[in-house]
Each structure stands twice: as C-alpha cells, then as structure tokens.
Image 1 (cartoon, rainbow, N blue to C red):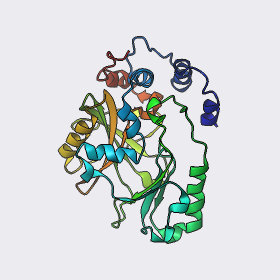
Image 2: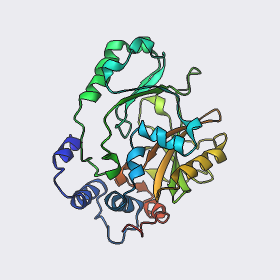
Image 3: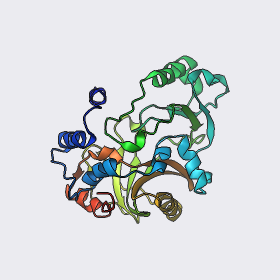
Image 4: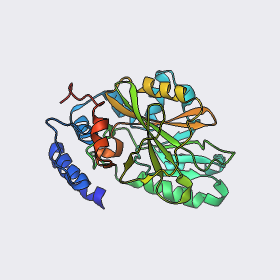
Length: 293
C-alpha cells in the first residue's frame, strides 16, 4: 500500500519526496547540503549522480552483459533462459530446480525459488509469474532511485539454483560495500531457511564481525566463518565497483566457487537505521560525494 501511494505521488519533486520519506523512515531531517551520514549521502546519490551504466546494471539480464564485458563472465550464475512472456516458457523443459525472477524486481521481490518442480506445479508457476508480468511497470520508483528507471522491458530470467543438488538451504549472501573501488564493509546474510527474517551481520574488509546491527533486520547470532577464497571475492567486488563512487556488490560462495549476485546502488533506499547510530556516520566517511553535491 505504501509503494502504491508513493507511486501515485510521482508528480512531487524528487528532492521534496526524499526529504519526506527520509523523515518518515528515520525520524530525522535530511541534510542534503552538507551530508555526513551514509544514508544522507545515498539520497544525494539518487538526486545528482548519473552514469548510464547504472541503468544497465539494475536490469537483471542486462547486467550479465556488463559483467561479461568486465571479464568476469565466469562468475555469472548459469542461465536457463530469458523470456519476454510467460507463454514463451516450456515448463516441462525446465530443470527440476531453478530460480525464476523478473528482470526489474528489487528488494527480493518477484523471485521464485523452485527446489522441486513437481511439488511446485505448472499452474502455480504460470499464475505467479503471469501476475508479475501483468503488474504495471512504474516509470518513477517509490524511493526515487534513478538507476532503476532504466526503460528496459520487463522480462523473465531463469537461472540454475546454485547450491543444488547438495541441497544447500542456507545460501549465504555476501554484500560488499565499495567506495571508489575499495571495500569498506560487508554484510553477511544467513539463516534464510528458518521462515523468519534473514540474519544480518556487519563485517569489516577483513571479514571480522563488528558490533553493529541494522534495526530493520534480525541480528546475526554467531559470526560467519571467513569464506573460502575470500581474497578472490574481495578482488572481484573491488574490480566490479571501480566505475562508480559507490555500489554494493553481492556475491555468493558455494564451497569456494564464487557467483555474482547483483549490483545495488542504493542499499535499503537509504532509509535504514543502525545500532549504534554512529555507524551511519562511520559508513558515510568513505562515501565521497564532493563531485556531485
């Protein structure tokens, strides 16, 4: 409902809407003139920074071409197919396990993880994806996130389910926060299979867990072990981030095999809060917005 209301208010200027949403979500007045916090600088990033490659990188199919051009195609999750409509998909020909998603979905929305095609069933599959494809495509995002207003048509992409067939349920998501090509912090997301909100831990660039949590996520109870080939993951993230002042590079690691997840430019749309609150400013120190403020 919130997203629908914000969509109807697309006529409101971005700067005003961002100030309103920031206040509603964080309880603070947004400082765009001399931003200090990471969350404040993300709002300025939305308003001021324009790199055409950001548009490619927010489409789940187009980004694959970008990754290949950078020489990192080996890290892409194997592709089953890309489709312009549900009618193009031969359900019977799909593998037993796969992940289906729309190319314009975000925030974990419009993603279907199939671990058993027989249990899922063709009718449920077609109905769910048909609903996603029929939804109105917005031209102005609720969070006023410029990079997601890319104009690419909505498509369906189906990828191999990584972690299978061994049945890895708790696939850990490593999110590298990079600023001008250097990683400062990492989110480690785990415990996805428990039916609750995911557990989130915050780590430094050496993968040492920090005493920091996000107030909108479940704190991670136990530190994650340092992943195999961590230095390789760090190098991949930093190479892929060099073109942008800031980007979150999401990677997976399955028994030492690195997979690319996505590139995210506006983590949480910049509306999250941290415990301690000072971490927001700590993250902001590495985010140089002087060239586009």
